[in-house]
Length: 201
View 1: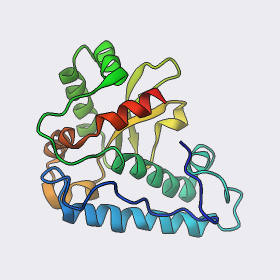
View 2: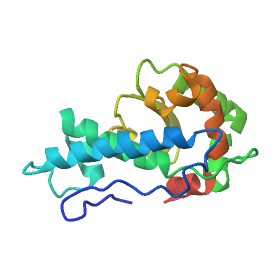
View 3: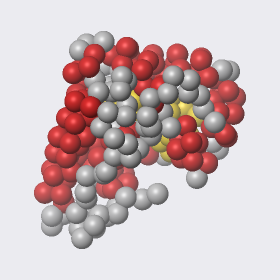
View 4: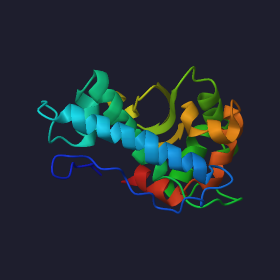
């Protein structure tokens, strides 16, 4: 699905859940800052930079594929955050993959638990700020990809499926410097139906 500008402008995505629905994995306070302030700033910055540029009128995905510098950074952060926030649902203690994505995870990683371990290592060992992704190639093979800053796997020709944000603003209010503790909690709020849809579409 492509993200089209509306009247030449991109808009802040609406969250598909209430402010406290992700607790205790993500607090309402963190969500307020992360979505309402950080993501809103990226949206504002991109809209200001696009006016009169050669990227005006393109979809968000096209901008991420073609741009560089500040436009890429802001567009990439919007795309990443849109995928990040829309992959969540209210907290659930028992939460595992479904459908074709579940089968692909077992095929590539052996077990869901082994995939979790490798994915968490990817998030924990990424130096500085960025994202860890589960992405699929054209043949449906899954890859764990580390992307610094505003990176997105679509620039590698891969389809993004699942992502954990390891910028400090994603977790510092709740976990301080305990990044791994944050990553462990995110498994409880993933919407595997949505992630399976991303894999199969």
